[in-house]
Amino acid sequence: MPDHGDRRTTRTDADVEAFVASVADERRRRDAQAALDLMRRTTGAEPRMWGASTVGFGSQPYRTADGKDRDWFAVGLAPRKAALTLYGLTYDGSNADLLARLGPHTTGKGCLYVTRLDDLDHDVLAELVARSWARNHREDA
Image 1: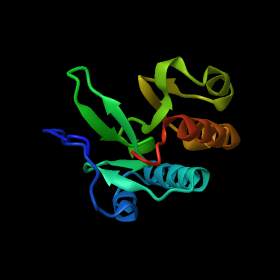
Image 2 (image 1 turned 120 degrees about the vertical axis):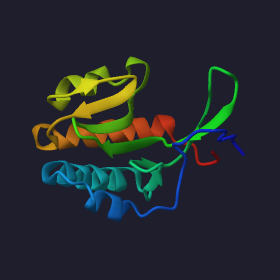
Image 3 (image 1 turned 90 degrees about the vertical axis):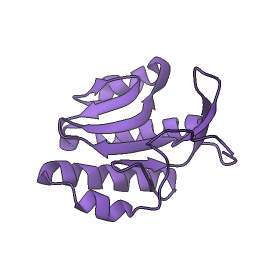
């Protein structure tokens, strides 16, 4: 079993739907619900809360710089104030072909930041999630 050490962002039993419904900004709440539905359909998995404000799907092991084995979600989302953050979609500069067709976004290490989900090509987003899920998710993790 992976060590969670002192990490605050670990898998919890909190209610995902209640969390999304509690997002104060109406547009961000709608975007989060739409992204949640798309990820659920695309992965075939049920979401879980990770910490107090991140929704994750599936599981993947990883090793930290200090050599500890950890557990993390394969793909996920967080409705942040500035943007909807989609996790696990851009590791190591991957998926440049899909990102070029996606629509307005910015990226970080493994993250995709979206201001308006409606501005994206949802078919491309679903393909991005499917590709990332296939690469990241481990059934035995």
